[in-house]
Length: 473
Image: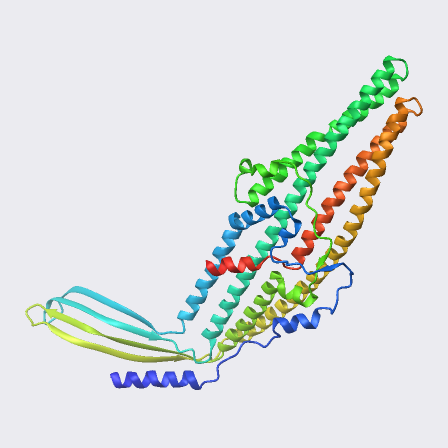
């Protein structure tokens, strides 16, 4: 019996080595897919600089912002959950790989049975121990392709973790910029409140000496209270951004760092765009890698569905000892051994296997189209953000000049009004212009910084840290 079992095992091994295994569906690798789509040069001209995009937030020169993003990337709960999904995908690979190897189990049992059939045997007691081995040889490669599909899922989950870290770093940086913008906006309102308070006192003093009218006082009062009404709303905006940053960090809103509550200017980004080729940008983006991992997974699943056309084999081996005791009879012990080879092959399934193959191939084509769409969207984002970065820098420069001019006009109109050389309407117009230009410049600085963040994000900077974390965990 043992010799027969060895022959069965040898025959199955020979079939495994000699058979032509099913292969994954053919598809272009990622570099080739990128080269066929990526342009040779960007369409939007921008100043180029050799900038490291890995930790791009360091380019803003704001230590608080740098420290904030680093803490968020380590403490965010969504990142920790994504890391757990990577572990789950890795465990799935282990499970699928185990199907390629034989399985060995130990078994034991004991029983007592009363038999009354003639001749009467009385009580029959049995007990046995043994080993059972089973193996499903992967003759046509279906299980191997399932392993490849699960490995592609691991690559996709790692890329998804990197994509989450990239998005989180960009969202945190944007929230930090919005916080500094709101704090600067609050400071602008405070400064203009003082200017308008002085103007109100000036009109009241001139009214006391008969040099002004009650209308000027009412206008000054209206301007002041209208501006004061905007302060609570901006204070609420500051608090909202602080709460958002705290949640990004995996903390409660009241535990926000005191470094954030101290007002600072909006950090100024680099004026130049990173010197990156379009093909390198696409290869660097984690969403492109996630889409390509799905293509690899679907290609392997096509092979898995095709392997269903072919026979499946299973080998079962058992060996053990069985002791039986009959009442009034001596104990008998047997050495039990068995070997079996089972084979199943599909004959008629009403087109189920063919339909499954067609569906798998359709899902693969869908994933390839999704990859192309992801790359097209990525190129659009880079081009748009390059344009926003260039135009934002020009806007900040010109609005800075406009604010200097409106500040000068406010000072001159106030002096002329004091001397009685102009009406209070000139002062009101100058106040409105100064407030408008101050807010416009603050908004332009915000948009310029956000454009730089969006550009770094579209270039896929900073996601290598995600791979490092996934590899350690």
